[in-house]
Image (cartoon, rainbow, N blue to C red; front, side, top):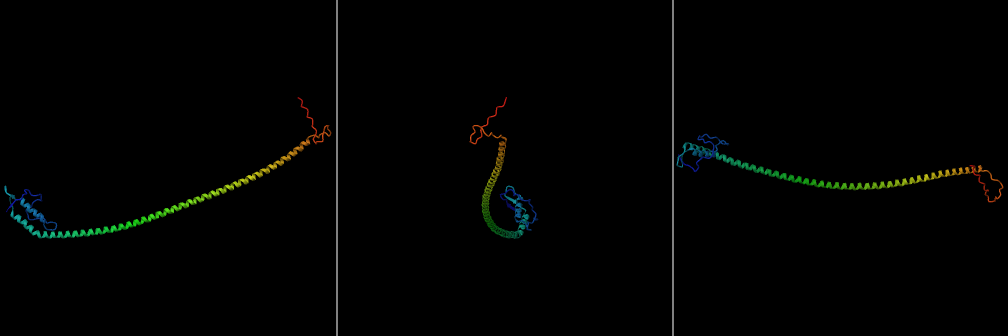
Length: 235
């Protein structure tokens, strides 16, 4: 059998050629139609090429056997293609269902996040209210404490003033009592000294001799005549 050669001079990179009819099944139990068509092309490239011509000698039995193999397995390939199409549709349907579930889950999660955000906003609002209330209470307690401290300071100042007045009064009483006691002591000492002076005068009067009765020049003035001064002591 003669066949005009194509423009390609070398076969493409494929698996090792095989001219037998025993072919490995594909994954689904049949044969790979694309691979068997590639084998036909390999048969043509591996056949004898007539030099200086575009003709090739092909083993007719091998080529026909390969074509019969492909022809016999075409229905199976079509069935597999249909199965693949159905599987593709099922996969797409499952993907759509999965995408729908993801979207519904995302929407539910978004609603949940919105609810949580609402809860967070409510919590923040309540926290701000509590913070303001606590601040107001602290300010009120601070003002009350300052007022109490001022009241206690004024009270302590008044008590100190009262204590100072009492201390001054006690000091004045003590001073007055001391003055009275000192006056009494001095009066007693004065009386004693007066008595002692009286005794001393009496003693001196007793020690002095009596004056003579008549002296010339004596007057009735009530004064005693002058006494002559004693002679100076001998040296």
